[in-house]
Image (cartoon, rainbow, N blue to C red; front, top):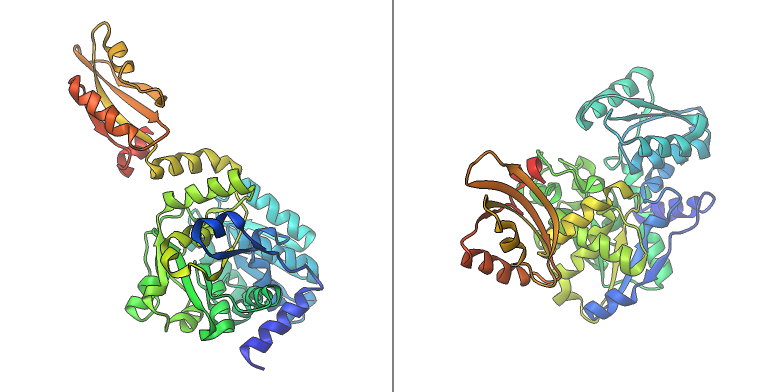
Length: 408
C-alpha cells in the first residue's frame, strides 16, 4: 500500500480507541488575519497531545499483548506510550530523567496503570535515552522513538487524514510545529505537494532549519528547553529523509518569549489551554500574514499539557516580549526624599512589580533592583526620560539573560 493508504488504515483503526480530535474554525484569528483559520485541536486527545497516534500505530503492527515497549520521554510521548500499553495489554518501561516534574510522572503512571513501569534515571535526557536504549537491547524489547520511527511517522499522519475528512477539502496551507519531525514528516508525506506548508521551530532549537541548510541532520546543542515539546537538538534521520527537500523559506523560527504571548492570549480570550509547543503554529500566523489573506489555513495545536505552575513565568516572559515590563538596577541616592523623588516619576499607568535593595553598604548610594509594569510600551520612553532629567543612574537589565538569571 502507499503511504497515504497506510495512514488511512491507521486512522480507521484508531477509531476503536479514541474519536477524531476536533477541527474548529477560530473566528478571532480569522478576523485578525483576513483568512479562514482552523485549529486542529490535538490538545483535546485523551492524553492532550497527538503522541498517542504514533504509539498506537507502532503497537498495532505487532502482537502487542506479548511485547515489551520501551521509551525515553519526560512528557507527551511517555503518556502516549503508557496509554496505548494499557489499551493493548502490553508491558511498557518508560525511562524519564530524574528531574522530571512529579505531575508528569503521575500522569504517565495513571495512563498506563499496572502495565507501565516508570524508571527515573539521568539528570539529562541524553543519559535517560542511553539507558532506555541499552535496556531495550538487553531484554529484546521494542524501542519506540518519539519521532524517528516509520510506524510512528505513519501514525502521526492520521492527523492529516482527519483534517482532509473534517474540512471536506484540502486547506491552502498547514502550519506545523517541529521538534523531532514526526508530525511534520507524516503530514507532508500524506499531503505531498497538494498544499503549502509552514514549519515552525522555537528559536532556541532550530534542528530542521539547520539540517536543511547542511543537507543532513546536525546537532544544534545547546538548546533552549522552554518549549519542551519541540526542544530537540537533532532532527531524526527518518523524519529528515521525508523533509529534506522542503524549501528553507517554508521554515520559520519564533522566539520563546513571543510564544508566551500566544499562550496567554489563547487562555484569556479563547479559554484554550496550550503548552508552549502547542502554541507555535498559531503564533506563526504573523510570519505568513501576507501569504494567507483569503486562504484556508489549518494550524495544528499539538498539545495542551501545560503545567500551571509555569503560568507566572509565561506571563512574565509575555510581558517582557510585549515591552510592557522592564527590570533595571537603579543607583539610589542615600538621602531623605530620594525614594519620593523616584516615585513621583511614575506615570498613572506604571506599577512597581519588584523593589529590592541589592546593596546598602555604600555611604552615598544604594543599588536597587526595580521591576516596572505599564500598559503601553511607549510609557517607558517618558519614564526613562524623566529618570535622565533628574540625574538618576540606572541600567536596563530586561534583556540581559545572564544577569536576569541571578537577580530576577
